[in-house]
Amino acid sequence: MKIKVNKNFENIKETYLFSEIASRVKKYQQENPDKKIIRMGIGDVTLPLPKIVVDALRGASAEMGVKETFRGYPPEYGYDFLKDAINAHYARIGVDVPSESIFVSDGAKSDLGNIVDILGDNEIIIPDPVYPVYVDSNLMSGRKITLVEGNIDNGFLPLPDQIDHEVEGAVIYLCSPNNPTGAVYSYEGLKAWVDYALKTGSMIIYDSAYEAFVVEDVPHTIYEIEGADQCAIEICSFSKFAGFTGVRCGWTVVPSKLSSDGFDLAKLWKRRQATKFNGVSYPVQRAAEMALSEEGRKACSENISYYKNNASMLARLLEQKKIRFTGGVNSPYIWLQCPNGMGSWEFFDLLLNEAQIVGTPGEGFGKSGEGFFRLTAFGTNEATKEAVERLDKLL
Ligand code: MLT
Image (tube, rainbow, N blue to C red):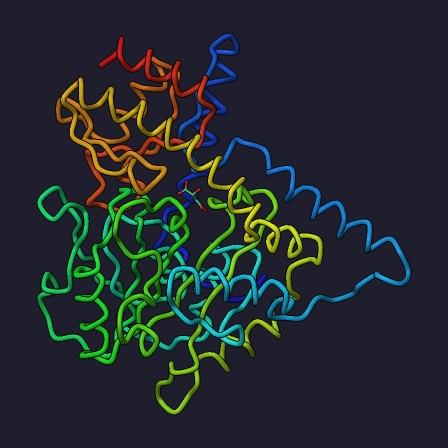
């Protein structure tokens, strides 16, 4: 063929982080078929969906099989019943996010990857380490990225005063509670970013996928910060909150006040979605609506407590071993410093070979993640207990 391809793909790693881990683990399992591997790598949930959510999924599926209640294409931006439920979710936090600013999708990852479609060639500012989708999707589009270092000294919560050059009109990615470090911005920290965005004419893309894990007095949404509705898009997900990793549903908020260069960003996102996306299926949206109901939230928060119990088991062990870590309190992730100055892939190999535990090497989340390692608390209580015993022997 003589076609041109997108050569920006040369600038990203050949394999996506979690695909790379999966293929290494598969190889190990093939070579060691008798070994029982405990998977604490990708942040995938293990508890089944709450019964009430499954009932909603089943009920809505049954409606699709009846002439009178069958539905074809869903509305491009989500059914009103789900947008209203999301609006009520924000109201419980104390912020007003109008239903017209809410766009239902098949998950946060898709929206985080797709949002670049409506943005021009801006400087991109991304704290490092971070969820790899922000960096990869911008590199694929040929954007220039400034990384802001997270480290032990700043508690993996970099602030704008670390940026050493004049910024105008940048796009800033923030994730809080953070993937991978589990660190959470305080109100002051998040305000510093919002003020910075307003001052420099920048926009924040705020990933709040882990919001449901927040227990301390820290922001659940960026819209708790004054002025954020003039400079921030928020992207959230049902994956971690309601166990929807295999069901697929999320949402993006594009406030009506976001405009730049004479363009209204919500209009651009609508146009983008209407062209490239056909919406989320009716049964999934009914299930998501149920997850946000009073009973649904109760069931989902029981599952979150179950995972938090895993996080506490891991945290206790690390404290005993005097290994430094962040996360585990407002987050399902524990981010630890690899012992004895080990590199993060080196520690990955050690855990896999000697304890048959799979985690995620910090370096996979950016160069500031080198020397660190992420363990997820999304496993079963039994598997986590066994992992703690194995780690206790090994470390
Ligand atoms: C992770 O392990 O970082 C997440 O599960 C990835 C994701 O949410 O796509």
